Amino acid sequence: MKVKDILQIKGSDVSTVPRDRPIMDVVTQLTEQKIGAVVVVDNAGKVTGILSERDIVGAMARHGADIAKLTAADLMTAEVETCNLEQSIDVVMTKMTHGRFRHMPVIKDGSLAGLVSIGDAVKGRIQDLEHEREALKSYIAS
Image (cartoon, rainbow, N blue to C red; front, side, top):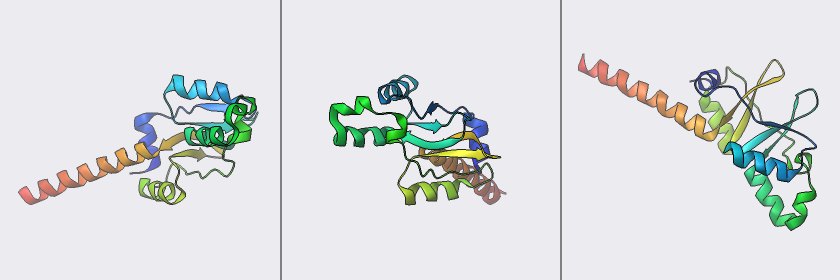
């Protein structure tokens, strides 16, 4: 299974925020949308970072109540690992596992085309295994 297959199933909508978005607004957005991360973009819509619940919790431990004075740019991970539509989900899962992160922006022609989570990757891999199992059952039965 490839990244494009996952996006065909889940859709390509991505929750984004500008770099200057106050952290408390980001927290509200994450909560209301029931998501674990947002992609931080510049004025042209180019990916400049990613901000996850984990980033925010870590910042709370470091900054306490002063976290409310910070912006998305202050807390985002600026070195964003990305993938493309043609990458296999196995490659994406390996990158996520080795990098210890759970969300990966998908880039097409230099623009944001979607977001894949570790949950999406695992679900896709399970579907692949189910198809293989069915094919083997069919082969053995014939």
